[in-house]
Structure formats: structure tokens, C-alpha cells
Length: 325
Image (tube, rainbow, N blue to C red; front, side):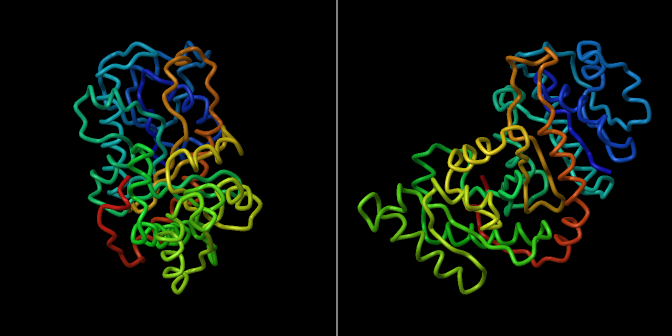
């Protein structure tokens, strides 16, 4: 059974979950969120409450919210839903967790010390080695850095950080059951820096890290970012290391905006999610596309049990705080 959080009830999370669960058996899905807010939305979606018949639901309570607005109550419900989902996953009551989108400003209004799902899940489980991987079609992307400024991300380019990311990316493939995978590293600068003509991060940090890691795993690069993601989408590489947030996000969403799924690797259980936000501008209007949520649930079902088993068998590795996004 897969736990599915409804996300921020003021956004499109409950809508895309409601539209998604029709694709799965009632014995596969356990919904976690505010039942009152969810049920109140169903008439807008032209869905009957009988949709929930036979579907397991863990109600976290909370206030009634207004659609399409950043609210403290929405953040509180989102936080509680994640906390309950983590508790159930840690107790093996669910095999994996698929999450609908939350809003960072609402989390802050609710008093959360976490900026996003990744940091919250890492904090709640006590795991420091938590990574984010995107998957759409044949393309998988490992993010070395994520929700930080571009200037800060560039400042984190070091031989050690790149090396640790290569090791983590390979570990992600193992946890997903992908054997014999090849890791590619995207370059930071245009044309991989042209041997220092357009930046020296490749020669100073990235290439030495790849050379060092190559003794342990199958890794190549750095490759210009304007081609490596395309090559991976055609099956040449199993996973690409994106050095900063937009480098990998743009590639995945241009390839297939609706079918891209985000996964957190390094938790004791697999967490999958949509790769988009709460979309307050269209919340409650019955126009949100649920494909990414369907894909997130499908990935949780596909990888969840195998991931949990492999994680329990795998030797832990310590990489400090570098892998925490």
C-alpha cells in the first residue's frame, strides 16, 4: 500500500489526487490529509463522495481553507500530513510515500523550520544523506544542489562535493534496482569551460572528482549541459548529475512536463512526488492536470518495495551536510 498525502489543501494537490486515485485499486492507496477540505472539493470536480468508498483515509483534521490562497492553515495541514505519512512509513504500515505539492510560504506561516519536502523528510527521519532524483522516460537526473541561489550553487562546486554526488548518484541507481548503470556529470560552464576559456571549474574541481570516482564506479564527463540530458534521454547514460536546480529542471520539463516525477533517495522508504507546485492560480477550477501525480504513484508502486529492501541491506555512507538540499 502506498501513502498519498494531499499536500496544501488550498492548492491543486487534492484535485490531482482525486483525479489520480481512479487509476488504482482501493487496496493500493491510503490517502493522508484533511478529509473535510477534500470532500468539500469533490462537487467542484464533479465527483461523488462515493469516490472514497473503500478507499482508506487518514484524516489529519485542520481548519477549512480558501482555495488559491497562501494560508497558515494550509501549511499546518500539509505539515501534519507529511508527519503522519513519515510515521506510517517508518512503521512499515505503507511501502512508500507519494506526495502532492506544498507551498513554501505557507510552511513558513505555519512555523515550519523546513523549506521543502526534502529537508522536512530528512529532518523527520534523521537522515542526512538525502538526494533528489527526477525521472521521466529514460532520463534520470540527480541534483547536486537544489533550493539555493545560483550564486551559492556555483560556490559549492568543489572536488569533494562533486565526488560525493557521483557516489550518491550511483547509490540511487542501486536503490532503484538499476544494475550496471552509467553516471554522467553535466558541466557548469558553456562547452565544459573550453579548457579554461569560459571558466575553470571543470579543470579545477569537476574533472578531478570524476577521475577519482571512476576508480569505483562507471562515470563519465563533464559533458556540456546543452547535450548531456538529451543523450541520457536516448539511453546513453543511466543518470545525469545536475549541478544546480534549473539545469536539470529545464531539461526534464522540456522533455515531458507532465510526466516528470521527483524522488527522494536516501530515506528508509521511497518518497515520490509531482515535479510542480501548488498552482494557486488554477486551484479549485477543475483544470489541473493529474498526469504527474499518477506517475508519482506508479513510481512509488514500481520501486517502493524493492527500494525498502535494498536500503535495509545497504551499508550506510556518511557525506556530511553536502547532500542535504
